[in-house]
Length: 397
Image (cartoon, rainbow, N blue to C red; front, side, top):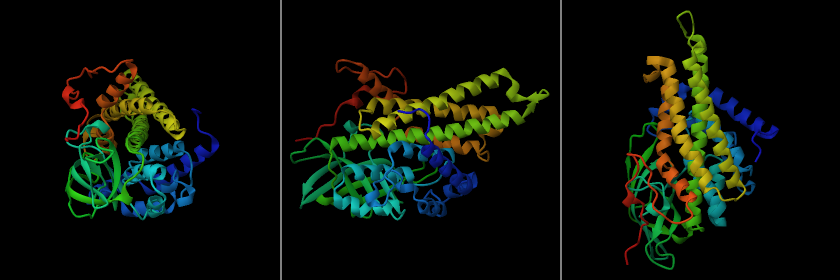
């Protein structure tokens, strides 16, 4: 893995940054938050017209076919500009479809994704909010040449904006009984009930109930548990990229502010306390960048990356929030009011930290990987999840 960007990567990063700097100012994000969809449709049209949605999708289906590290640059810039776009919710399922989908599924969905004509969503978490395949309880039962889904999913981002939702479920019968899988579900299918949630990011998020929802067999993806694991890994690590971009931007805004804000006859950035805080912020942002890029490089090379993904997301959850809070403190009282733009980055980062697994869940995965025998892992924090909740889900006979 090369730590520094090569010439082509730097050019792509610069092009994305220039586009978003021109098209996505904080006023655009504030306006999108007032929309029912939670995203800016004019920005979405301009963004997809530039071909960015196909950056790492196969050329056969209209994409550019670039490796995943290029996609990490896109997400870093989306986080930097807190772009109100359904890119993460759409590209995570699209990457899984490109890897595990049938030829028919790819032809039906991927060209529409690259052209911006189709928004996707994915549903993994359930009651309790755990980010783990073991926690999947929504059941899929064979019926009439397809499957029937019954259960509930929480925190489904962009569900109402999407045309298809990639749903993680557990087989209730058949040879796969007890294992997990993925199915593409049309969001307009009978039996689906969605209730809007109110996330801190002020984007579109739903609590979705599936009551006997029929899914044709050709909408089921191959891969089983491996596909579910990959979906969760992709979702977590690209969220870390978003958080890194947002944290770096708030750090840069703070550096400008403390160099201009005078107190006691000099810029407040001249005080050692501010300098120490700024140094800690820089270390945190660079750490997120290195960890997330390493994990994404491993994923792009089809190498084991579960621990590296967990390291990146756990570190991003903690340190990006630290950077945003420190930025607010540097700004003083105005940093905590809704009208200050710094508040936008803080809200987005705080919300992203709750998606794709908390730092406690990812630390538990890291700790378990360090053990040479299967043992119970205690998180050692009052906010950790209950011990009993970590048991595997069993399908009743």
